[in-house]
Image 1 (tube, rainbow, N blue to C red):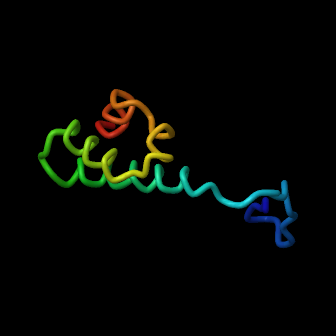
Image 2 (cartoon, helix red, strand yellow; image 1 turned 120 degrees about the vertical axis):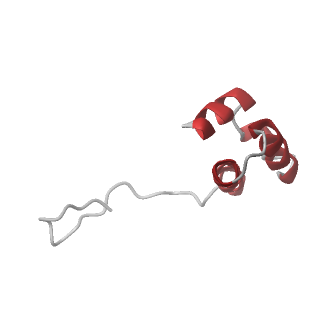
Length: 76
């Protein structure tokens, strides 16, 4: 659905024809936990990344970005 502050009658945009992908949802949650834990502790980001990877199922692991990308994202 697309809208702006001046549009009181929003129009439906592109309609999805598929359900959510559980693997992508789990990867997003894992990345969020990694980022939150990195910001709240002094633990090495590599250790936090490894813990996050270990918590994922085998079908989710190929979908997570490589370690260097995650560490760079966490630092910013």
